[in-house]
Amino acid sequence: MPRRPGGARRDGAGPALGRVPAGLLIPAALGVAVLVVPLVGLVVETPWSSLWSRLQDSAVVSALRLSLITATLAMTVCLLVGVPLAWVLARVQFRGRRLLRALVTVPLVLPPVVGGIALLVTYNRTGPLGGPVYDVVGFQLPFSTAAVVLAQTFVALPFLVLSVEGALRSTGGPFDEVAATLGASRWSTFRRVTLPLAGPGIASGAVLAWARALGEFGATITFAGNRPDVTRTMPLEIYTTYNTDREGALILSLLLLVASVAVLAGMRERWMGGAIR
Amino acid sequence: MTGPPDLDAHVVAARGSFEIDMHLRADPGQVVALLGPNGAGKSTVLRCLAGLTPLTAGHVRLGDTRLEESARDIRVEAAARRVGMVFQEGMLFPHLSARDNIAFGPRHLGMSRTGSRRRADEWLDRTGLVEYADRRPHQLSGGQRQRVAITRALATDPLLLLLDEPLSSLDASAAVSVRTFLRRHLAVVPAATVLVTHQAIDALVLADHVVVVEDGRAVQSGTPAAVAREPRSDHVASLMGLNLLRGEADDHGIRLVDGALLIAATSERGQVFASFAPNTVSLHGAQPHTSARNVWQLEVDGIAPHGDALRVHLAGAVPLLADITPGALAALGLAEGDPVWASVKATEIAVYPA
Image (cartoon, rainbow over all chains, first blue to last red; front, side, top):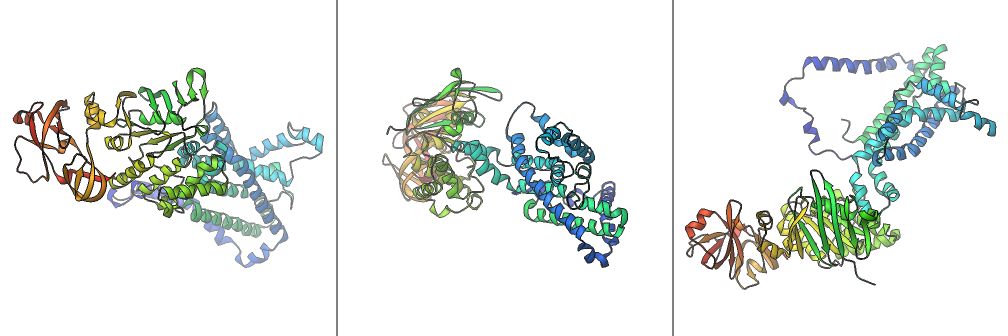
C-alpha cells in the first residue's frame, strides 16, 4: 500500500514533545499484559513431550482438515458475495445505504451463539426457509458440513465487507471516472480497475474472514452440532477434548494459536506493508 | 467519412456558493482555453462536458449528437460520449504499464487485446514515449506521466478532447516541456479541444480562442492576443498580462519576428517563445545606462489603470506591456504617442522551444 508522504512524522512521535506520561504508559503496559500473558501461559503449560503423538491422533487430523476446508470455503463465499456488497456500499448512492451498512454490521456485535440459534430456526426442516426445501428435496441444512460453512460465513462476512469497503473507498473512486472517460462500462471498470487497485485490501479482508471462520465456535455448535468428521472443527474438538483430556486440549489450542499468528505474520509481510510497524 | 463534430454547449451547474452558466463553442481542430483563477468553476464545466457531473440546465451537443439536454431529459453517460479527458494529476492507472494505460481506451472501443496493444505502441511511437512503454506510473517522472496521460486521451480518437489543468501539478521545467509537447500534438488533433488553465501562458501558447472565466461566467472571449491586448476588466488584464514573443534563437540571442534582437540568460536554438511579466519591464525617458541587456526605443500606444499600477502598452520594434507605478508615470510625463525607452533584464526572460 502506498504510504502517505511524511506519514511517519505526522503521528506526534519523537522526543520533541517530552517524556511519555506514566498515566498513559502504565495502562498501556497493563493492556499488553491482558493480551499476551494468557498466550504465554498456554505456551508454558503445553506438554511439549507428548506433542507429536497427539498431533497424529486421527480425531485431531480430521478436525484440523475439516477446519481448513470449511474456513477456506467460507472465505470463498465471503469473497463472492462480500466484495460486490462492499462495492455497492462504497460506490452506489441510494436511500437506506446507512441502514444496510448497519444491518451488515450486526453479526459483528451479535453473540455467535445467537447467530447460531437464528440460523437454526430459519433453516431447520420446520423453519420458514428450511421447511419448504426439506419438503421438496428432503435435505436439511443443520448438522451438516454445509451448515458449518454457513455459520462461519455468517460471522466472517461482516469483517470482509467492512475491510473491503474501506479499501474501495480509499482507492480508486476518481479512477472510476478516468475509466469512464476512456469508454469503460462500470462492470469492466470494476474488473480491470477497481479490483486490482483494491487487491491488497481485499486480500487482507479475506485473511481476516478466514481467521474468523477458523476460530468460529458458538454459531457452529448451535447450528451444525458437534458431529465427529462432519461438523466437529478444531474449536469444537478443543472444547470436546477439554472435558476429558486437559493436556490434549492445550496442544490443540497451541496449534490454532500458531495458525493465527502465522496468518497475522503473512498479512503483515505481504499486504499491510507499512501499516503495521 | 465526415470529420469530427463541433462542440456547442450551454453549461448550467451548481458549484458550491455560485452557479455556473456558460455558453461554449469549439470548432473541430480548434483549441478553446477556459482561463480563470482557481475556484472559478472551470473544471466543473469540463466535468459537465465529459458527463461526470450532470447539468442542472442547458445542453451539450457534439455536431448533431445531443449528449445532454436537461429540458428533454437526454443524458448520454460518460463512457458512451467518446470524450477524451486529461486530468490535473495525470491519473494514470497505477497498476498498469504506460502501454496498458494507453491501450485501455482502444480496448473499450471494442479492439482486441493485441489490437489495442498495437494501437498503444503506435501512439507511444508517435508521441516519442516508446522507451517508457513497460514502466509503471510510479517509475515515471511527473512530466513523463502527464505525457503518457495525454497520449492515453488521444489514443481513443476522441470526438471532443478535454484538458483539465494538465500542467498545474508539474514543476516549472516539466511544465515547459509538457507545454511544448501539448503544442506539438494539439496542432494535429482533429477534435474540438477545451483546455482549462489558470495560467495565461498556456492560453497564449496553446489556444486559438480564450474564454476568461470568473465565478462561473464568461467575462471575455476572443483570440489570446486580442484578449491580452484589450482586457475588458482589471481582472482579465492581470490574468492575461504577459509578454510573449516568438523568434529564432541562436544561443542567447533571439531574432524576433519583427527583426529586433532579444537577449536571454538561457541558451536555446531554433524556434522559441520568450515570455516575461509586464512588471519586469522598466521605462526610461532617455536612453538608459543600465545593466539590462535588452533596451529598445518604443512608442506609448495606450495607458490603462491596472490595480495599484498602470499598464502601458508599447508599440514599435517589440510590442510590449509594461506595468509601472503612477509616480513613475508622472515622473516620465508619458502620454499616448510619446517615445519612450524600455529595458528588460535577460534573467527575467523565460525561453522555451515553440
